[in-house]
Amino acid sequence: MPRTTPSRSDVPDGHREPVPSARPRSDEAPPPTIADVAREAAVSKTTASDALRGHGRVSGATREAVEAAARRLGYSPNRNARSLRTSVTETIALHIPEFLTSAEYYMSFVFGVIEQATRASLNVTMISSGHLPHRGAPPQVDGLVLCDPMAGDPVVDALMNSGLPVVTAERYVGDKESTGVVWSDHETTAVELLDHLRAAGATRPALLASDSTAEWATTVLDTYRRWCARNGLPVTVHKAPFGSPPEVLRTEVARMLAGAPETDAIVCAADGAAVTVLPEIRAAGRTVGKDLLLASCVDSTRMRLSDPPITAIDLRPRDMGAECARLLCEILAGRAPRGTVRSLPISLHTRASTGL
Image (tube, rainbow, N blue to C red; front, side, top):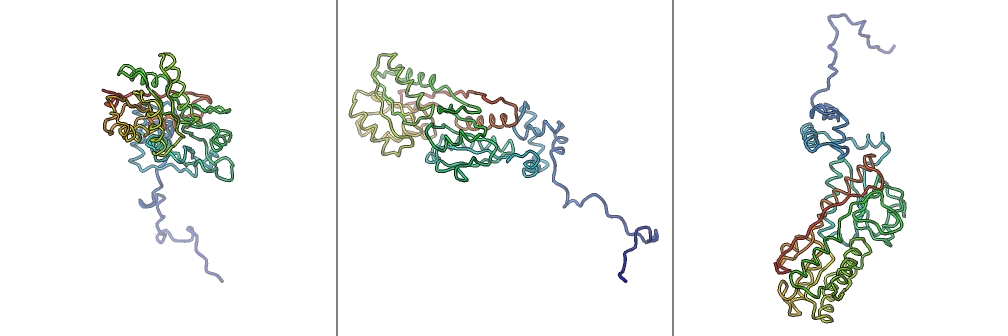
């Protein structure tokens, strides 16, 4: 007959084994929850959740208090459990032109998106220009951030038509409206730059433009042409393919100066182009900051450290990336309506390359 284990009622009181404590040992303590974080920060669970996800109208001080409480407790959100509850992936996707990932503007933009997404406890995945996953099927994410989307790019067009919420850095000029937009006033700052060049003595400014169909590129080109017409000055434009290698940019500037030697100022649209073409300017016997003024529509470390330092427009790419991610999070949470448009201020920094 099998041996049976007596029930607790069959064991004499003096021989009963102690009942194990219901409290787990310290090395088996459950991980902290959002409720623990809320108690630690003295806020509600909703406020704690909003603060950690970057959602809602939470003050900066409250957000910092909640984040500090989460760090002290070692809190980490359970993405898998939350995804099962909400039927979302807790992931957003980011697309930038693949061949520009080494450009400072775009890398700063990426870091801005990642930093803000991390605050909201979201993952970020990159989508390359080469292909869409799953043979063209929409990516398995909750929403998308597109930087400088170009109409006619098949990947951009596919993402814009994916049915997912899409926030774009600058407006998409194709036939589909973004779910949200963060844009900067490139027209006003371009006029400010051109006015600065004229005040510095330029009478024949030229533009080394990009052939990109992104809004910022077309805005800079159109603004330059209107400004020249308004001031009664000739238009000198040379276009370089978007993402051109250095030798292409230098060739265009050499052709520009050979064909229009009276040019006394050059504005370069693309990130890094102004520094790249310095050798060709010098090879033409011109001195930057004296008999030829040089400026860039995109500021960067290279512009600031160049010899001479180059006048440029600060587009605040890291802030732009963060603002795009923030807006997408708010749209996904229903805290911002579809069609929201926000602006990010940008500014001109004048330096020695324009005689100052």
